[in-house]
Image 1 (tube, chains in turn yellow, purple):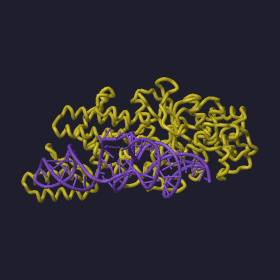
Image 2: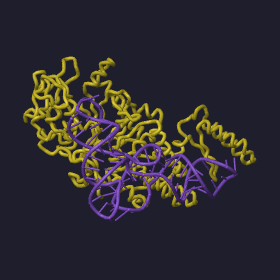
Image 3: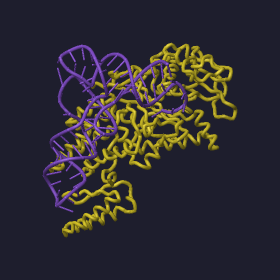
Image 4: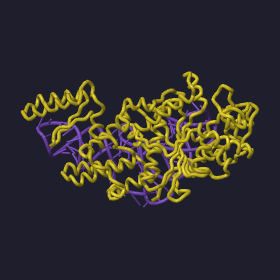
Length: 467
RNA sequence: GGCGCGGUAGCAGAGUGGUUAUGCAGCGGACUGCAACUCCGUUUACGCCGGUUCGAUUCCGACCCGCGCCUCCA
């Protein structure tokens, strides 16, 4: 087994070596819950869902932690705008996120720590940093990290600390010793959300919570840390600085970052306002189409969210479900059976190569071809085996979980027609064909086609799906 | 200005120092009452210029173009 992982820190693929044999401890930066999760969040969550599924499939004992940031300035501002306690907002958004995850077939992480449940751990870590002179309290009551003191600062994002100032984009703050310093603890007014600390009433900065929660749950050193592409700097750079200064240990061995999601070839961002929430997308496309769209690219490649690309993803997924249509009752194959599959090695090699799901999908297309050929040739036993394999591999990617018939027929009703209407027309067409009245038969087929219903004639009869 | 990523056939998107990616679309054939589905076959590539090499899309260098981060953002 030669798992290769691209690490942002090394800037190349590396052979994966666990800290503890057979075990992988993974931490992924989750969402700040002040709004509904968007398609960029979906990408990160799906990417790591696939990664964790595959690692477990490969026999690793994985501990997967993904945090929830449930206290920060954006949350407080939004809650104030809404005129509600911030906890009401976060609880609602956390529920919504979980709902989105379930729809997309994302398994929950093993641990889902919340910042507000770890305030003591955060304070402890800040105190350690203060004691070590890696942090200081400014006269405005905030506690800042002393970037200058951490000589490795910049190693993840490839930045020279001295040059960070050159861009003049760093927020200048008279309270900081150095403009590069960042907040570990923010003082708060009496009426604001906060906690008691050695530095007074306040709340944690953004970066420190991940250092505290990851080391608290996974240890001072762990194997993999992941997140979205825009977290490399400053968030993850700061996490390294905080964690390694606090523990004096090497923090993380492999840093994994997903690629960006673009919308119609423009960067999707909060500031541009061109982002789509997961629930907006799910209102238009079957959840698994969205998942298939994401899995169809390598997790590190930039992807472009567009109508055309989603339709293409749907067509691609349709092919799989069409092939599985007559095998709804076949159980997914276990790993031991999958080893016998003629595409096993291609699938495994693809996924071992930095989780190349697109290449893995090519292997599954080959399986579909074999399955269709076997079904066509009437080789029922062989077809059953191939269908079971297809479902088994699909489970590793989190695909093909829906009932094929339900997937292909889509949500009812199709336009103003119910399934019964459609089936009545199909029956009428069959009778017309038996009567050799092909004019009437074709007329019915055209009528249904105009409503997006595609008919497929087989020896056993006629089935339909939305086109 | 600093750091980094990428340019593959009509589209999407993998990969490789010499041998078919894959899917969709196109074309030809089988199947069909005709189609659809499916199967078989098949046409379109590797930004530009040099270099290394027996041979480069694949390695090296320059160039052009696009993109990202450097600021809250997954």
